[in-house]
Length: 82
Image (cartoon, rainbow, N blue to C red; front, side):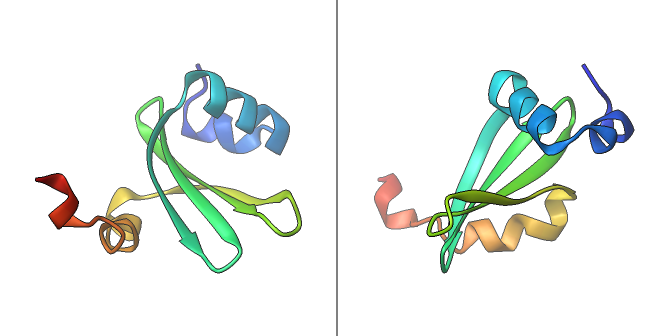
């Protein structure tokens, strides 16, 4: 499996194929027309931003978990856990 640097060098189709096949989906959120999913892949994290109205992937970016945690925590409803 590719490491972080090798993953960056792949084109978007290859990256998505790897994420769908070997990635572990962690969290999802929405920002306007964007559906954003966070994946763990081979020890690093990747965000995929999909524009629902345009029906296309806007970006696939490697992220640091500490940089995106708050954006996902805002969507977790604690009252639904119990």
